[in-house]
Length: 92
Image (cartoon, rainbow, N blue to C red; front, top):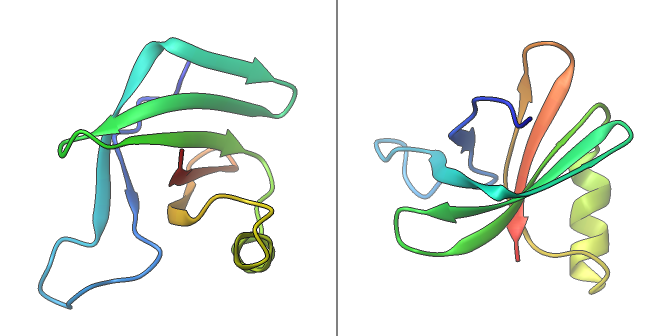
């Protein structure tokens, strides 16, 4: 079962006064539980489909290096969540 999370802090803020969170709705029929992580497809209010994962360990700097070299999708948002989990949203 997916955590009740519907927004994560954006990786890059566009303006200080703007809402700096990525809002999404997970598709309940697209949950892929694996050991120490959950993967799900999610849709933003603008209709964009993203991949959201919940993991125990996460290194945004490493993800950025992998994305720049073409080995990972672009990081959109991430946030440390209660219970020792991280929520991570990326392009799909």
